[in-house]
Length: 272
Image (cartoon, rainbow, N blue to C red; front, side):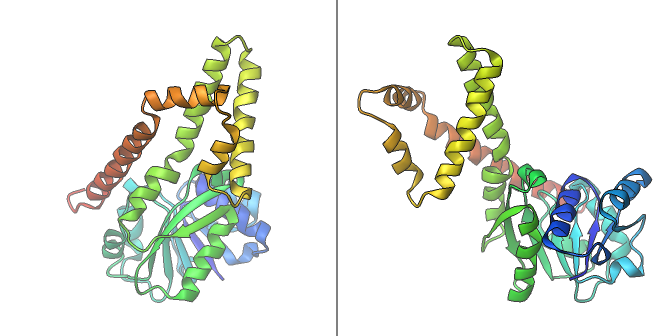
């Protein structure tokens, strides 16, 4: 499978590094990157071909991964509009809808929208995927193989659900980091040093997440097993309930999803 990346930033670099570790050949990967320093880094780090513009060799790929910033996508796609044939186009640009990308490409429909998150940078990412109806099962499998380079992935059957994916897993790492901050600050107020509080907070989340991933039980069951009647955990959970923890999380994700939908409208507008 020959893959060309349009854009060579952090997420593209993570994908390229992961693909090479999976056994892909550097000769099957190309990158179109405007900045010379970035091209030199990509060539040095990965041994891939990096060019300043999409030439015939770069266009002769099976999969074109769109990894430029959403605000730059329309301009970046202009040189290739109407020139693609059977290439599968995978966009990892947040917010951009397939209808807009297809229009900017001159009516191309072999499109997949991907929403990865930042843990992809260490191979622990979670990606939500949506495909146009014209994308075949084999092409979906190819996308799964590409995204497996940086973690796990799930498919949704409606593009609107990508806004929910963005709210939950796309923005989710920030919520986790914020919770770590809160645990650390509370631990310090209880007398722990900042270093000890941070170590306890981070490893608790790492360990609990690993346990949830490995267990066949639902998170609610695992929570109940930690919670003894009249114990310390119950006291903390009751405090969470009084403060409306679950509704607060729901409101936060609803706000993120709504903003994702709004950004899609703004980024895809012809007046941009």
